[in-house]
Image (cartoon, rainbow, N blue to C red; front, top):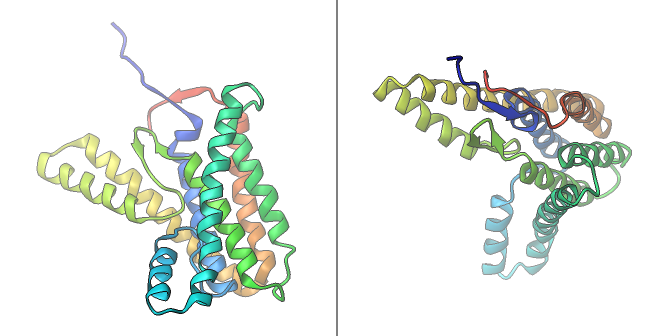
Length: 230
């Protein structure tokens, strides 16, 4: 009897996850260095700041941290809407649609001059990050994030503990995948830091290139299932 093979969608593959994490780290570095020292990918800090400013009665500062939070919520809505449209046949592939949306928006962001208030750009990046993290949530057989590392670090550490204490090879492979995602995010941050300093607002187009490669991978593979060998 032949060996049973397990399969996965291209959108859940390690290769695509690495590219998306690379783009996620890049965009975080881009907004932090080039757009006001803000991490736009995750909203935990903004929610904390909202509470602090409200407690201090600093209402103007509190108001300024609300738009990125709202943009993140809208990104979730857009991502889920694209999935619904795909299920109804309105669009062919929601994953490709998400990446195409990201690419188009980031191309526009690259044309926004540094004289424009940073809030407009950070809000836009928050929206993009939300769309991405809401759309690509599974790495082979585990939930993950391509725009932030806390959850990935927890999963990697837990799997590593199981691999060491239980001599579990499957857990070891799982840990390796998550640490690879974290490393890709870090490499993206390094690349984003270097290029943003050199090319300013135009540097965001490097993230566009990464996403174009990701889009090409999805387009070539479609939604076909590939062997789970990663």
